[in-house]
Image (tube, rainbow, N blue to C red):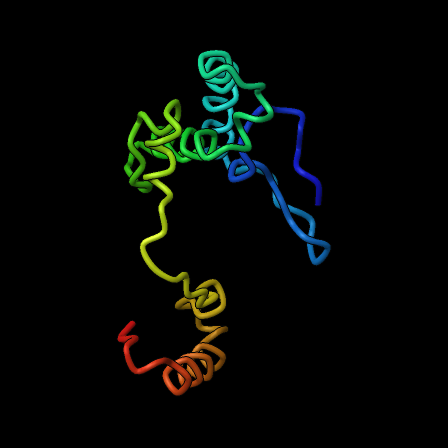
Length: 136
């Protein structure tokens, strides 16, 4: 689905989906974070000399969104330095890869009784197919 352009927030704070389902509405925490980020994005874009759209689509905008989620939750879920919202080098460093991404589809193997059999099968396949160096 297309990105929501009605508010200046990065995609991580927008209700997105594919054609398989309708995106769920934002939670209260997401609404607070989007409000904080939307208001701050206009000022931040001006400060760094970019359009709001270009800012929210950049790594700096993503950093600002993650920092807003931390602030809205009152916890530090995302390790992003505050300066990453305004500084390209800090944003690049915050999102620099440190290894491969292994997508385990954890939402399908969560600890839910209805998924017990499926989780056991998926875990068996992952253990059977994993590389020798992977102990995760």
